Length: 420
Image (cartoon, rainbow, N blue to C red):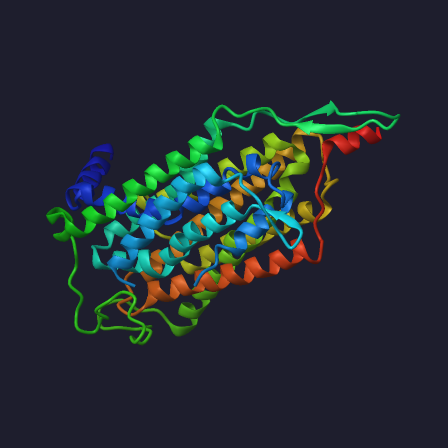
């Protein structure tokens, strides 16, 4: 049995060019690494930024920006340059309408967000120019765009939970302020590292287009397929003579499911993550951000070793995602005093919930994308559109709830200590 498995693995590897796998993986890595790199710094940035706990909601609204290799070159180059600049300007603020805002951070994140958001309707459809086996490599790379910065942020650390220091100047009223211990290295060093990776992703895309070994792995589209993966004139295909078939109902259902998971995973949940996690401590928030960002790509790696699930199985996973999302939203609404606060069980449950949500969303997105990959029409293009629509709606709704409806409230450990 072991010899048979080894032979199957050898056959799979001999039928592909590992260098092209690496180039596709690095290309995918460039999709979201800029945005994800900024997000995993939130446990450090959120305590200093003038927006405070609402900073994630401001950042998410910049991520929803609704095609051609030259545009991709420009996008990857712009992402690398903006991240390098961010390393030196991330803590700069300006006063707008009487309020301080992290103008440099939000403006430069807007550039990296364009790279990430166009990847759904540009980068991923572009991979249809290559053999199907390389799509999984691209998707794993896209998943690693969350895993790599999370791993580095985990090494960086947040220095531990805040200490409350006595800042009383005069009088009888005791004033306590939180002091956050320093991480192992600065956010500036972190952003320089991310910018370097984005530059390597630019070089990988250059190689994907020009190296003969990569060009040799491209596929020729038949006459009934669009000439460009982003050709908006081509009609949607549900049944074709190329052996791929999907009913119109399932086609639409999967697109709606993709929109829903992106509504939650890209729009809604990142905006309220600080409110659901920080009441359990800065360490719990740090572990949540980093480990949940790792869970998505690890789930996507399953595409290398298992057969993609059926629609019914994906539907079952979607039910679990909705249930867990409802739980973390409940914790966010209950901030600053959620249940099981100041207990190890509360910290464990909140971290575990976010890890499961991220992993399941990553697996569902991989499953839907793989089901659409053989579509000779515009399946991957419509998948990208559903991603953007779901993300945009989630971002707008949550931004209004956080910043205008004031549904969520921040937690300050020192205020509680002073009250006691």
